[in-house]
Image (cartoon, rainbow, N blue to C red; front, side, top):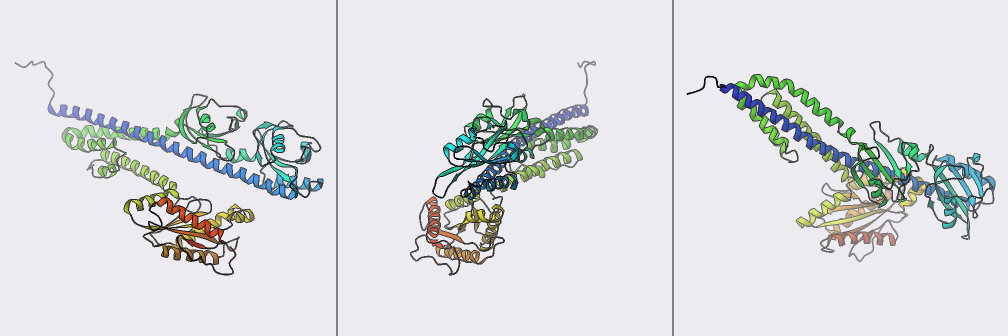
Length: 534
């Protein structure tokens, strides 16, 4: 006999209760899975962008130091015949100090370290013999130098960049150098300081011994931080990214890169909380928008529990498979006939779309040269791997600009960049839709021509050479190029060997006078039009 006092749950209430529990569980699963996946993706993306950012700044700073050495090299050549003329030395020191704002101060010394000229003149060093570490090392080594940081005679913490001055007979006459102050306003502080963000992100720079050369907190400049895990990696000349805890106990997403010229390390850091803040706000917004619709679900679920639970369950199942490339199509096929499911579906599709866009953009940036917008070596490697897999033959044209360093030295790097961009444009115009022109080095390019004979590739190379030789370049006028041609598998079964043959033909073209096309295995000498200076 049934107990009349036993609780009796009607089927509708039971379905409602079970459906609410299921809906709640699905909602929690969706939020948890989505948050976990997106959190990790956001951290990974920020790690990558922090590394790329640090690497970009390392490259920019390295180029600045190279440019500074070049300025001093030119000045040393000019000073070689004027070391006995104090007035000229003073003018040259002032020019170096004020022309590009690269140095906080400039000093010219003789072979014994006696100061012959300075800029600014307020340093009060003329006639004094300097024995600072930077001057001492420059006089001892007699070669281009970027010193370790040290305290100068007048009390400035600095690095000293110098070039030796040699006479026409090869005798050592002295040195010319510029100082970059590390605890005062300088070109280095401005170059790095303009990239400081207000969300707690910052940069700092250490030398090869772990001494801080730049930090937003000026008090820390000169401090040694070898115990820091990131700095320890930099001291081993390793670049990369990681999530670390800084000296204040704050978790930071860190990207770090080594400057090849000085072995300095640039570290870009962003707080983990700042990185995740947009995601946390998005998750809260999604939660708040879900609550009112949950009430509507409660009112509707008693008569259509099965219909309501079906799309939610499908969406919840796909929420944990965001890494599956077919997830987007699966979500689109879900029949979300009511608002809540449609909103959840829309947000998930939007997240997948944004993620794919970011991944595609990163992939495009990784496979494209930023200056010329041509494919880079990574794109070429992909094409070579495809040919190796399919067995489809190809020809390679190796292209190099003749006397490109002279263009940079004479007209500047901006003009040199314009030449590279124009050449890239002409290569694209001269290529078929299936060809792949790539930039693989400074002024070095390759053209990958699939299913193309060596003879036809030689004709393509010759047409490109003639086109460039007759083209009027902005600022620099006429330039020429040298080209080398090789073919796979005709020249060698090893693709790597074929690439080397193309480079060898390029160097042969250079050796034979430049402005030429050399084809591997071709006995006849390459021709170039008369009147064109290579």
